[in-house]
Length: 186
Ligand SMILES: [Zn+2]
Ligand SMILES: [Zn+2]
Image (cartoon, rainbow, N blue to C red; front, side, top):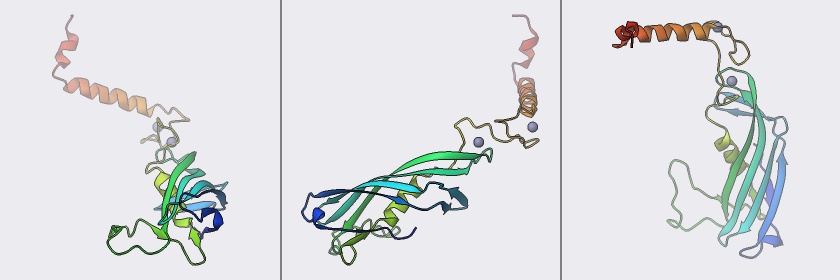
């Protein structure tokens, strides 16, 4: 994602000052691991900047309508994502030991850049990535593809699933210790 630079001004000069900002990110595709996401209308964010004394806190929401492939049936599906954004931009590098750094993930803050600017790109990028589900489904009860003929079972009933269920049920009954009971009159 390209830098998204916001220049801080007098409206955030004092501790406790807040400034709402919103914007549009004209990104139409996003590669995430081996997944290809399409974002036809880009992303939109609504944030509140707060002067928190040591720095500027940015909190809010990132929204995006994403088109992706269903992991189960491979149909195109649409997801409306709304991810929480939270980033702290310190005015200056903290004294050592004041803020603990996570060695693997790096510091959990950013810095206000030269000329009193902050770059929202990383925070928004993180909010988006965190919101994309690990498994993408067109619906909770997507039936997926038929393992026998490959038809999309949401659209076509090829009958294979029924046959397989009936067979499995037959086998289950046959191997049940109660199998013998089914022939008895109760
Ligand atoms: Zn599906
Ligand atoms: Zn089938």
